[in-house]
Structures are given as C-alpha cells and as structure tokens.
Length: 457
Image 1 (cartoon, rainbow, N blue to C red):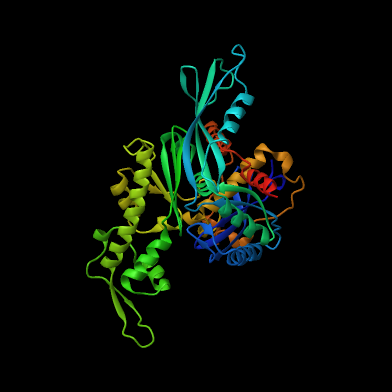
Image 2: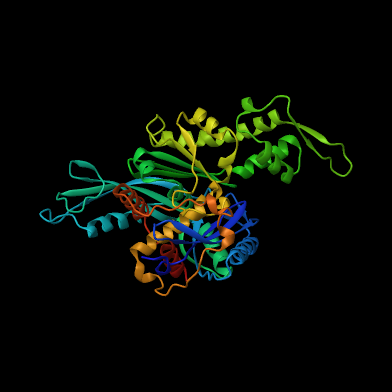
C-alpha cells in the first residue's frame, strides 16, 4: 500500500508542562513519517489532570496553530488523546465460565463474555472502568494459555488487568478537546502509548518496565512474557524536582528549571564539590552562588523517591528480583537527566537504558522528534494505525496528498539514512508482533465514555 492510501493520524499529548500535536502517516516500509508537528506550553494541567479547561483549550489551540504552521496543507479533525493523572488506578481480577456445551471448541463469543463480565467488577463511586486487558487464560487444568480459541474443556478462566479513572477527569479532557474544535477518536492510557513507541518485540518477550517521567506524573507499564502485568501512575515528575530546587535553593521557578536542565545530575557523588552556579540577584540584590553538589542532592532525593515507587510496584507483581531481562526503559522528558541510568540501576537493581521513540520513526526526521518527551504522542499515532488496520471501514477512503515538509526533515542530506528496501522474515515477524501489541487491549475506550454520557442525559 503506498502512502497516499494511508490515513493521516494525529496524536495529542496533553501534559503538565507541554501540549504536543503530531500528525503522522506510515510509509511503504511501515515506518511513521511526520507531516505536522506543533507544541505549546501547558498551563491548565496539574499532575496529568485537566484542572483549568479554558487555559488547556488555549494551549491545545496554540499547539494546533504551530502544527498547521509546520504544514499548511494539514486538516485536523480527529485526534488520539493520552490519559494519565494519579486518579488512574489498576487492579487484577479473575473471571471463570463453566461451559454449557463441552463437546464444542471454545469460541470468541465465550472470550467476549468473560471480558464483558469484568465490567461488572465493583469499583468506587465516581470512578469508571476505562480498560479491561486480558492476560493469560486457563482451560480446566491447562494454564498460561495466550489464546484458548479452538481448545475444548469444561471451564475457561482468565486473569484481567482492569484500569479505572475518575469520571470528572475524563470528562474534563473530552471537554477541552471538543471546545478546541476537535473530536476525540479514542482516549489511550499514556504508559501504554509510551511503551508502544519505545518498545521492540524483543522487549515484550524479555520482560521490561517502561518508566515515562513526565512533567506532572511518572507513568509505569510492566510487561512480562509478552503480557501487560501492571500499570501505575506515580504522582511525581519533573515539575516536582523543579519545585524542590526552587524551594530548597530559594530561586525563581524559571531559574530552577534552567539549572535542572543545564547543570542537574541525579547522582550527588558525580557532581563536582567545588563547582558553583551564579544566579543574578533580584532587583539590585547581590548575586547568589549555588553549589552544583547541593543541586544534585535535591534532584537525587526526589528521583530516588520516584524510583522507590517503581520498585514498590514491581514488588507488588513479584517482578523486582532480576526477573525482567529487558530491565527498565526510561522515557519522557525527565529521562534526560544526567546520571539517571546509574541511579535507576542502583535503586531498582535492574539494568536501565533510555527509550527513544525512534523504533517506529522513518529515517530523515528532525532530531527534535527523537527526544523521549515525544514518546507518548508518537505512541498515540501508532494506536491510531492499529485501529485503522483493524477497522478500515471506519476511516475515510479519500486521502489527501500531503508531503513531509522540509522543516520536519533533517537539514543535512548526507545525514539521512536510506530505509531498508527488502524486509527479512525476522523483520516481518517483529512488525507483526508489535502490531499485535495494541490488539491485546480494548480499542473503544472513548465509546465507553460516550455510553456513560448517554445514560447521564
């Protein structure tokens, strides 16, 4: 299929510190070509939750304007939106069905029945189930079956990972998007979007913890033996570190952010004891001398706390003890702190690396897009493509010819790597495996919310 028969899919990442809108289309190699990109500072979001709808609308519109400025040929109507915030909770449940006709093979209908039964799980008032994710199945005495269709047996059961969220928080996201003149095609849990952008098939099989350190929250998704085992939203992120620096060193928030990015380190032992940063004094006050060592101590304290939470969640699912061969993959804007890999390995006892969203990006994109802070947004586009590949009829048939603008390509022609022209069997297997990544999860989260609204009317 050539690219003009592929839809343009837009991811909208509504974060605590930034709002990003990225439009992408798959090329003939199955890689994402970025054909529009805009971002804006975020003001109405705290800890991943939309609190001030008007401020959020302004920021979304600014990100959209910047996206249109990067490519005037774009038309954006529908977007895939990430959802996070510490109102997101998850729980493990178990479902079983005793079969009526044990002579027949197990069918998809029985699996659908198992899943729909999970929506009756008791959850606190004010929350709603936003995703039911199947893990492994059992048929009679056979355990750990990935897909039981075609088996025969008396009793079929499964373990489920249920994700819940606050109804009002979900409603606020939808209102902000709709009042910005857009339609939410689907809401996607942010740790799952980030995981899709930075993971390869081998990570899924080896077992990995994806830790996405954003501005207001740190999102966690844990995979083991190809199954999503756990998700969590930790209510601390890069903004907390900035506020700690501001309070601890008595500086302005903008100065704190600048110091964190330019001179910050997650390990105090690695910071030079005799290095100082000079901050200009306010309104004629004398300049301040700030120790780089003190700065690192403040960052290390908060980062250690975040990593302690990660370890706690891994212990909860019994995967803290060197079980994850793929280790910890750090992504999100906060992952770029110096020496964070070493601190992560020290606290969690697992290997760590930075996850860049280049896994699925076409060659020749601008460097900005390969930054970990865009993992969620690019993962949202991948989710959209998974929907397209499963429900082609729901997507428009006429696709407009839109090319990748020069501003979104690397400036130096010789830097552009040539894409592979022949795809090996291994590559095909890998691509199929990652295509199945979203297949494990429910695809119509937004429809569920709409049903909720309909009942409320």
